[in-house]
Length: 157
Image (cartoon, rainbow, N blue to C red; front, side, top):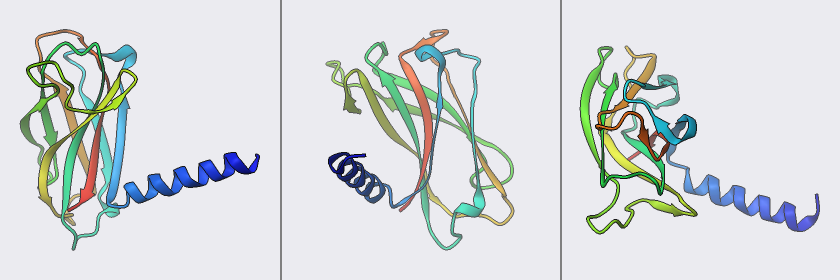
């Protein structure tokens, strides 16, 4: 590897790590061909031992979409066991673009990423060994087009 490439990769690594220092967990599930069937539930699980019980966390749902997503909003049903061993379900309205069609997400080149707060003031519990998120859309389209990946980001507040 030449010195310019090594320098570039080193700088990129430093930037990436410094931008993500508060993230404890960040995972995506890829949707085949940018299509999300209505009956498809995305499950994301992580080990609670990664979280410090004395810290307070926030959970965000992260949506990666392309320019073919046809709506301003995305309605999701989110199940999680962050507060107890029993799953709790909530609906989440994700505003994807404004009324003029301008994307509210970051990105370029046809791919955009949107982070939507889902849960705040989370503390790790001894009774829960694995935290789970179950995510499904309840839009009218089947399949819903334009959604490439769905993820969860857990970060310290």
